[in-house]
Amino acid sequence: MGEEIKSALEIAMEKVDKLGEVTEEERLKWKYVPEGEKLAARYLKQNLNLLAELSQYEEKARKHVTEGAQDILTRNINLPRRDLDRRNNKKAMDGLKILKNDKVGVENIYSRLRRIFDHYVEQGEQQRKQAYESLKAEVEARIQQAVQQQLGPFAGIKVDVESQPQFQEEWRKVQAQLDLQYIKLLDECKHELSAIL
Image (cartoon, rainbow, N blue to C red; front, side):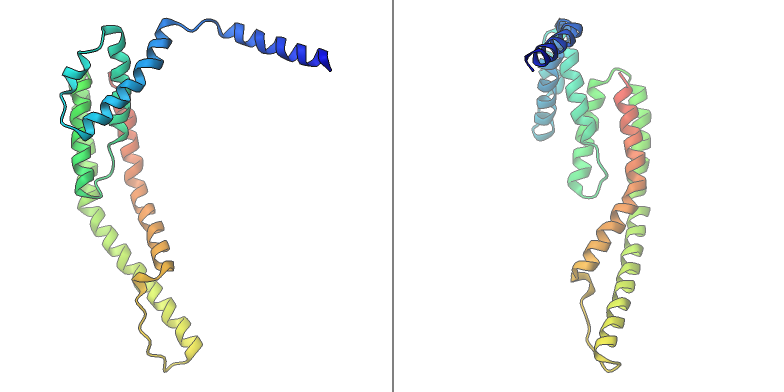
């Protein structure tokens, strides 16, 4: 049994040796990407000058700080469900435009994002209202049918469908399904945005 442990240890040591030494570039990345993430979080919460904050880092570290910041800013672009989402999107997009070198490429993606957001707010809102009313009528009919089966045709009970857990759960599913088409488009844009330098 002692031989098995020794050979397992030797195998593990060989694997570690094959990995090689950690490069200076990897060390910089491990240290400064998280700092960039923190910087982006502060930028989103406070009113700070992103370029001034970045200029405090040495050139070698700055690209990693920028990488971390861009990742967080990109992740903070979401469907504009509320006014807060709209403000966060604008702030994140403004920050990304500052950090990216290819301003034209960024603006092209932003144009597509704005169309997605506008469609989500305008036509999407109509779709959600129609789906809500349709689901409400459907669930209401099912409940009325169940009540009539239980109490007979003279049951005049009116049920507040919208407060029923079953309705709430089904509505969440319908909403998620409606949002899915927008989320796919949004994710494509975010992926392209991440690829731009």
